[in-house]
Structures are given as structure tokens and as C-alpha cells.
Image 1 (spheres, one colour):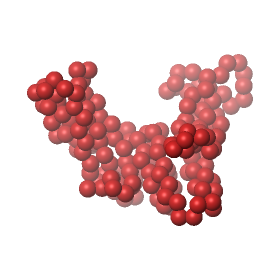
Image 2 (cartoon, rainbow, N blue to C red):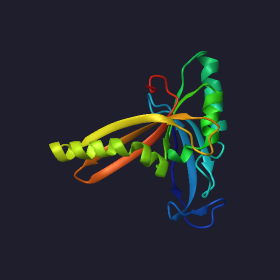
Image 3 (cartoon, rainbow, N blue to C red):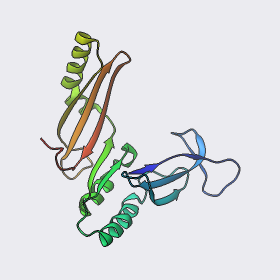
Image 4 (cartoon, one colour):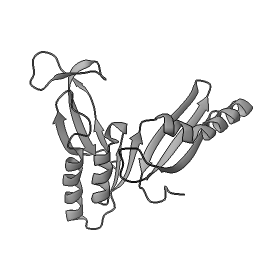
Length: 176
């Protein structure tokens, strides 16, 4: 897992900048952890306004190279949130032969492609009164991608309303 997080700063520390998303002056540490045991395997301190994906493929490569040095042929699966959902990250993982599941921000095209599934979840919720969670998946190509990638969308309907989340993955078994 690779996760950036906000670290608020106070005063005049070097490379602390105002980050509009977090609405504060901060650093942006990024950590790679092992999903099996939550051990930290890599830490990177980014300046406050850095994009979460800045040099992330290089950090991941360092970890992947070391793991494969110790365990040749090991299968590695990378997980990241939508802040890491950029073409360089997908390409880096594919080039290293790393499986990935990365959050993907919803947009109008993804909403259109998942609309039937969301409508079905709403109808099932209305009929049963029970929260519904349905999935759909399809090949998708964003304008900035050189090729199609597999996208899975989770569509939820419950008493609080509806929610859709998407991931892009190359993980074996995720394809229909």
C-alpha cells in the first residue's frame, strides 16, 4: 500500500506550503507499507503542495527491486488511492510487472457506464429496505492513457443515498 497523508506545519519550516485540498500549511509524507503486516517499508517526505504521485513509481521500484532480490519471482500487488491514479503510476507498475488496484476519480463517462448498475442498486434498496452494494466492470480508456484498462465500479444505495467508487486494476482474476 502506498499512502500520502497531510502533516500540518506551524511556523516557517522549509518546504511547508499551503495545500488547497487540505486547507492548511503542511508537509506531505508518503509511506509504503506491507498490507500483510502493516510494516513500513519506505518513507518519503514531500513538500506541502506536492502531488501524491511525485516520484512514487521510483519509490515503488526501489521496494520491488529489493523484494525480488530476496524473493525472485514473488508476485507483488500494489494498492493506492485515486491521488496515485495517474498514467505514470499505471505504466510504472506494468513495466515492473506489478499487479495494481488504484482508485479512480469518478467522471461523467464512468458515471454513464455505471448508471444501470446504480439504478439497479436503488431499485433493490427501495424493494427490500436493505443497503445494496453492486459492482460492474468494463474496459475503459481515459484520454491520457495509451491503452484500455480494466475498471471496476462499486455502486451503493442505502438510507443515506447513493455512492459510486471506481478502481482501475490489472490484478489477475479481476477480469470477466
